[in-house]
Length: 393
Ligand code: LMR
Image 1: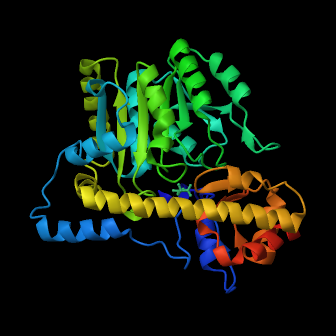
Image 2 (image 1 turned 180 degrees about the vertical axis):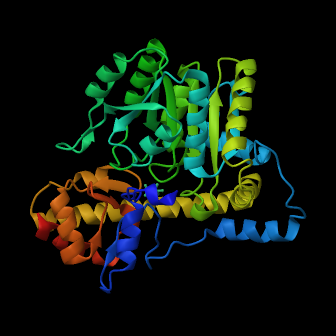
Image 3 (image 1 turned 30 degrees about the vertical axis):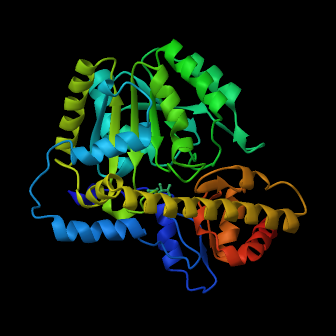
């Protein structure tokens, strides 16, 4: 049976991890996969998560199943964190999922059950795993214009024109904040215009919010999603705890759906949970339990917020530092956009060949589209990195 198989196409991001591991150079630099690293190049366990794990160890007295929705107290806390005071909560439902990717996969299944003819529109560009996940649920996908490589900014007019031409019922994937891979986000005014267009055209937003707290702050980063949730009758969202709680490998996330009324939301939740039952039965508990312990405890939550805020400002400082180093080394303003963008990623705007030379000649690992992980930047080697980037131009 297996002799008929062809090798799977490598994942553009994960492939880099292997190449980096096998590189013997001591000055190599991993700016590939989106994982936060501190000044020592280490991805720490957050203080509040450590404390929550201790409490969980002491207090948890069973590993019996929790049910299809996962930990409902975790879901309630995440609902507050993501949606804040927005939206009529009687229409909102949350189901725990194995990470943000799991939430996207579940929601894709829900789209298939409710409207398998819908096309799911993703921004061009988007996270490389969006289309494979959506297609794995046999959904049709297509792209709408989003990023202008020439100006390193959002092509908002082109985006809106494209969305206005879509048939009602189609789904529009949006990055809630910290757009991956470009770091170029919508402004509040643009979210408001977008909300009007989606509502008027009967398009259903599907918001992927994987970096809440990494851009401008916890509430600021969810502002766009909240604007949409207040404006449209139906919406889906996938939230991830991987980055903002730094629980990457433990897989905690939430699939949200907003229905036109409570009854429809209940039915959709049942279908969503049915999808989870087939995909993984019930979601893993550990990280979600830790997140719940943190968010239910005022002191722990405050400590988590403080550490997240330190993480966020460190990334902003690195953005600033690299933009300045590149300005000096390239003697141009070409890379100034790095300081203005937000989140874990930006694109340097290099060609595939320049990316390859950066890796092969200088040991600097960035994704093929020239996306680099801001959180992987070494604060004390920005000048050296800038020189290496300029050397391959
Ligand atoms: C990334 O884009 O690097 C992260 O979201 C990790 C992943 O799973 O690709």
